[in-house]
Image 1 (cartoon, rainbow, N blue to C red):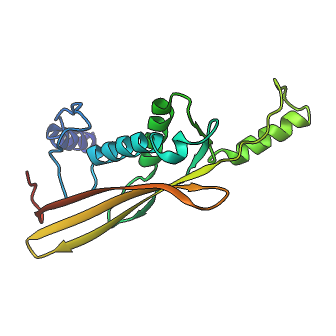
Image 2: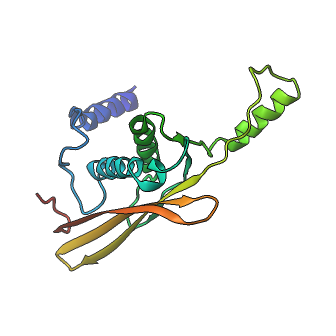
Length: 193
């Protein structure tokens, strides 16, 4: 009983300092926990700019019909731990919403499941409302993050480039590309404004 009481008292004392409340903030607002890395507002700005410019690019505007695009996984070649799938998710959403049906995004992440489902339909194991050809793509959208970092014993700086390119799936020609650049400076171990 004494051990249980001691453990309960310790848990209450430790928990007393943890009762701060979290609150929602605008994802585009300046972070209170800033560093020199990529932040939510950077990712959102990149996705918005790239999707808007891609939709208005020559290869998309000049294509007869509805071009199909496979959004490939973004490659992170920076020193920062970044969930690259956030870029793919936001850009895919922006392209679908902003294009108003002028382009189609082909989901390559579910290819194994799609092939298995097609096989079950063709063998009569599950019903279907009709067979369709598996969609190929006219373009691949690739993205990568690269950075250049420098530091002294007091300060650090990071220059980050996020680049996307649209490659024709038949010719291999890059028909569109664009980069988003950001550079941040700060001191080691302190927040900066």
